[in-house]
Image 1 (cartoon, rainbow, N blue to C red):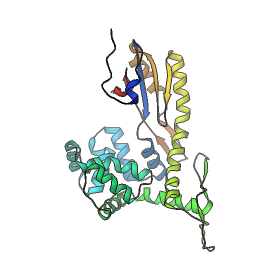
Image 2 (cartoon, one colour):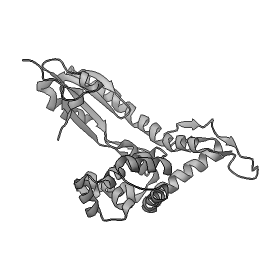
Image 3 (cartoon, rainbow, N blue to C red):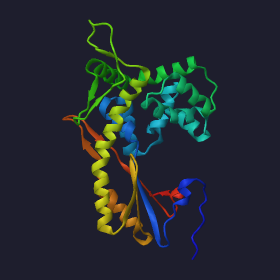
Image 4 (cartoon, rainbow, N blue to C red):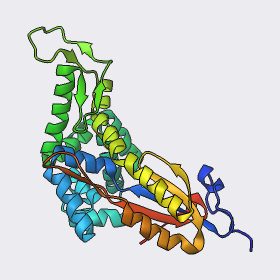
Length: 280
């Protein structure tokens, strides 16, 4: 029997499993947002994640909560915007990724235009301020990261990882506790460090475990990225393989005495990388 042709174009459409075989892809769901919620202990972000994980109720979907906070509307109104595929909802989806990666007002204004909104930088600044009013502890956590880096020249993460910032400038005010000053670009690096390093700490042991699960099944471990991996094996075994893999990958990691990071994994199956379908 001939294999179906790929429906989509692009590099991933060229990756096709041999006859009788398929791909199983796994990714850590929203790992950067979950790390930020765990590290900051922000109730606005953390509660939405927890309740959405527990109930699946779209009211608690993080994008819905972000949309409601940004535009000062109810979650139910935000759900309506989601169903309409409104530019406001598109912006809310893109907003959190920009914020986590240190996006400033000009970057957010560009994202608003890309989403189809007409908004000046001043208007976007008001949206950002409205969101930060809800995510107070997240804001304070990031301020503490900058303070630590400007005081010591580095960040020391809960895992013991250290990151020095060589782009810091010496503070001319010798009376200040902060020996250094961070430019906008360095601040972005500071914001990114707990997310990227936390991701590595979480994912590395799980990548090794996934490789061992593949060995036990006789599957090939063919790819891994920063927050996921993909395997190849017999189509007839695919569902059982996915269930076994998901049952063996730990979804929690203790960060401190009082904080535990929770990151669930999603799975997809398919014979063409560009056309993977989520396993429910």
